[in-house]
Each structure stands twice: as C-alpha cells, then as structure tokens.
Image (cartoon, rainbow, N blue to C red; front, side, top):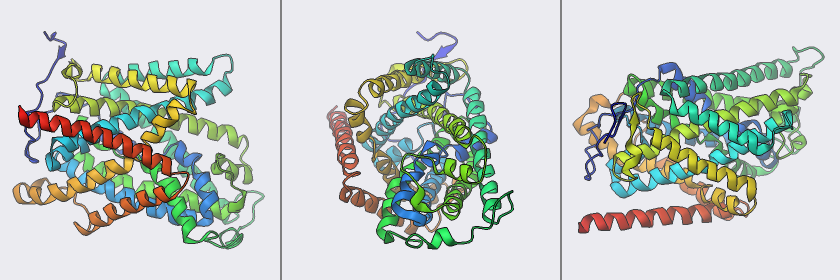
Length: 472
C-alpha cells in the first residue's frame, strides 16, 4: 500500500493513446525556463568536443569545419523534429512516447530501452574519466573512491527535488558555455593579432599543409563519423521539459535557443583552432583547446582545460542519470517496465527509477574499471550506433504524427519542423548514409555490428511481447 508521501500512479492503458491525448504527469514541475535553456546549451558541450575533436582534425584537417557543419545540421534537424513533437505532446518519455503513438508499442518499448541502456553505459565512461582527472589532483584517493563519491553525490542530487538537478546542470552548463565563449573571444583576438606578443595569422594554416581539404572529401566524411555522436545529449532537454511549469512553451523556447548557439560553439571553435594552428600538429587523444591556449600564452592551459573537462564529465553524468531515470519511469508508466518503478516521492521524484538506473550504471562503472578492454568494450560497442537508431525513430515518428496533429489539433504545433516533409526525409537519408559509411570503416564497423545485434535483440523482445499481447 502506498504511503501518504509516496504514490504509485496507474499505468497507461495498453492501447496506444491518441497523439493528442497527454496523460497527466505525476512528476514534479520544478524546472524553470533558465534550467532548460542552459541544459539545451550545455547538454552536448562535453569531453567529446574538448578532447575528442582532436581525432576529427587529424583525419579531416581544416575540413573538420565542414564535418561539424554537416553533423551539426543533422543534429539540428533531429532536434527540431523532436522539439515539434515534444511541444505538442510533452511527456517524460519524450521520443519513446512519440514512437509508441506513431508506430505502436514495439517502437516505444525498443527506443526507450535502447536509450536507457545507452545512457547507463556511457555514464560509466563519464564517471571513470572524471575519477581519473580527480585522482591526478588527489592521488591519495584511489580512482574507484572518486567514482564512488561522484555516484553517491549525483544519486542524492537526483533523489532530491528535481530543481536540485536543474541547479546542478545550470551551473555546470554555465561554466562550459562560459569557457567556450572565452575561448572564442581569445581565439579571435589572437587571429587578428590583438593579444600581447601575437601577430595576425592570416589564412596560412587553412591553405597550407595540403590545403583546406588535405584528405579530400573522404577526409571530411571521416571527420563526420568522428564527431557526429558528440551531438548526442540534446535529447535530454525534451525529457526534462515535462517537469517544467509550462512544458509546451518551455521546450519550444529551449530548442530554438539551443540549436543555433550550439552549432556556433562547435563550428566556431573548430574554425578558431584550425586557423591558429597547423592541423598536422594535432594529436588524437590530446585536446586541441589546450594546444591553442598554450600557443597564445595562457598560463597553466592544461590544468584549466582539465577543470573544464572535469566539469563537463560530471555534468554529463548528472544529465544521463536524470535522463535514464525518467525514461525507465515513462516505460513503467506504459507497462513496458516493472510497475515497482512507478513509486513517486511526495516531491514528485521517481526514486526507484533513479536507484534502478544508478544501480545498473554502477555495474557499468565496475566493468569499466575491471575489464575496460573486454566486457565493457563489448557493452560500449553495443551502444556505439544506438543514437542513430534513436534519431531515425524520431524522424519516422515525426513523419507519422505531424499529419495527424495538423488534422486534429493544429493549435498545438507551436514549433514546426522546417521544410516538412522534405527535410525529414533528408535527415533519414543522412542517417542511413552514416551507417553505411561506418560499416565501410574498419574502426567503426564493430560499433555498427554490435549495436545492430543489441537493437535486434531488443526488437525481438518487443515482437514477442506484441504477439503475447495479441494472443491475450
């Protein structure tokens, strides 16, 4: 029996609801517009940009700017589609709910569980990376000790009122955004020679060392494969919008403000990097941001960037724990996860869903610490291309739902997808092209194959459940 402070909301009916029927959310509505806006801006600014971008520069040269434009344009289209549906039908399960309403229970089940699995596995990478940096600062605390501290701190933050999560993410994201803006300002000043002891650099680094496309368009495409997954994380803002005071309006505003600024941050910082430094000087695994700060004479550049990357990792850990708990809660609401996860605290927090997500996330961390090159590597490969599956389901759902919403409740379309339906089809074709290119790339092929196997397994379970439901 539920206590007065804890309640268990009923599950949604078995039949897929009308896309225009939004079930009341039993969760808190403690997130403010500023939380969502900063979450949208900071959600994808992480270690993948600050460190991982070096690998993209190494294969594409200055053409990495074009790679980021292509990958960023695809992410913007997906976010616009998702924003359209979330503004019309806000729900804590976001694209999982949309997929169910558009395609049936199998789609909502599949995309929801795959996304949850993606978040709790990536969470291990973030926790381990942050612990490695912290261990370098305080060697007396073992790496596993730092992991434990981080997991406890963010579990407590997510078990408390949702506004605590919002405040954590607001300040984390503010630091990351501030770091990017300061980097862009310093970079532009260095390019024009307005910093002390600097001369204008001109276009020599963009046109030298083989030209702007030293490895041709194949290098640009390789760059796209290296950076496209860095845009994952934008989806969490539409999950969080369901816990704001005005979900429909707030998600529309957050999406509008985020997509253009994020593209500016990514493309702008890459343009600064390849203009200031020869692309041949970049080393995969080393931060190009540190190299630039060193070059323009910023003292202790490496340690400054270590702090920024550390904050970025903790921010991503916090956001992924939040997103995974809300996704599994939404699955439980629709009867696609154990009913026990439906318990909600008096403050509107799905505590059992949080604990279930952090428990599996902690298992992932332990596997990463113990067997990083075997068991955990297989898990990481199994989610490597899952984001593309999620994005594809978002696009297909938007194609199906847009016409129905236009017929039945056009007033809810406060945010519309550009160039519908043509740009939606362009986005789907681009996702297919990325998958094919990954299959042709020796280093990326294992991710596609393992992710395909994981997706096939989840689809098989979804199909069996569908058959059982029909028989019953």
